[in-house]
Amino acid sequence: MSRSIRRHRPPTAFPLALVGVLMIAVLGGCGLISSSGTLHSARLPNGKEPLHGASITVTSKAFTEQVILGKIAGTYLAAAGADVKDMTGAPGAASSRQAQLRGETDVQWEYTGTGWVVYHERTEAISDPTELWEKVRDIEAKDNDLAWLPPSSLNNTYAFAASEETAKRTGVSTLSDVAALPVDQRTFCIDDEFFSRSDGFLPMLKAYGIPFDSEEGVPQRNVTRMDSGVIYTATAKGSPCNFGMVFSTDGRIPNLDLKVLEDDRKYFLPYSGSVVVRQSVLDAHPQIADLMETISSRLNDDVMRELNGRVDIDGEDPGDVAFDWLVSEGLVKPD
Image (cartoon, rainbow, N blue to C red):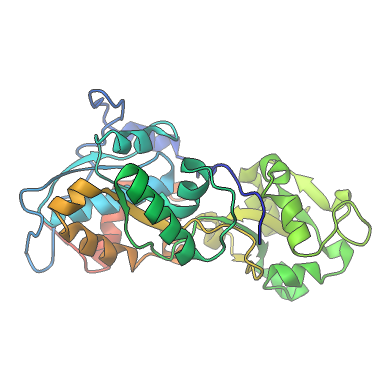
C-alpha cells in the first residue's frame, strides 16, 4: 500500500514535577542537560562486569517513555560495569539525535517510524515491523555509522481505543468491525493534527472503506475534535464518541480500562522501539548488543503502558520506575 505517512511523532507529556529531578549540568558543546546522579547503583545477578573499563553516554528525548527507556539502558549498562554518563531527557525533539550524530553521546532508544519518516524523509508506507527496521538499519549504517539493534515489540504508534463497555456493547475488536457498525455508532474523538495529517484520520477512513462527510459513512457531526489529552477520558466515558485516537503505549489506556482496537488492515506505520548505538562504540564493546537484546526482548506495549502510567499518572520518578522494573525482571540487584 502506498500513501503519505506522518512527519513526526507527537511526544507523550513530560510531567513538570520531573523537571526538578534533572540536575542542571550542561554538556559542553552539545547543550544537553545531564541527569547525572539519578541512576540507581546496581550490579548484574552473576556479579560479572562485561563492560568494565567502558565509558558510555546514554541520552533520550524528554517525554516520559523516552526517559524511562534511557534510564533502563543506563542503569543496566552501569550494572554491567560501564562508567555511564546519564544525559537522558534532552531538551527539544532533535537534541538527542544531533548529539549522537556528533559523537557526543553513544546510546539511545529510537523508533523505526521516526527514523524512516523524520530522519530520512521517506514516504513509502511499510506496515511490516521487521521490514521497516531492516530498511532503517541499513540506511543508518550507511549514512550515519549508527547501529540500530533488533527492535523490541513495543510499538508506540497511533491507534483507536474504546471503553470496555463500548467494545462489549458494539462487539468491536478491530477497525474493520468499526467500519461495519451502523452510522450512528461510528463516532470518533480526534485532535486537530490527526484530522489534518496526510497519514491521519481521513486516509485511515479511506483505507477502511468508510467515506467521510457522508450519511452512509462518517458524517461530520460524528467527529469531535479536541485536545489529545482529553480524548482518553472522553473515550472512557463513551461521550461524545465511541472511539478515540490514542498512542498505543500510553499509560492511560490500562488506567482508564480502554481497549485498543486492532489495526487489521495495517494502516498505521510501526514505531518499534530500537536501541541505537554508535558503530565505533559497538565495535569497541560488542557486549552492548547482547545486553540490550536482553532488555528489548522483555519490553512490549503492555509493559510500557504500565511503566508510563507509573510516571504520568502516579507521579513516580522515571529513574525509580526503570530500576524497579530491572529488579523485578531479575536483571539487576541493588548494590
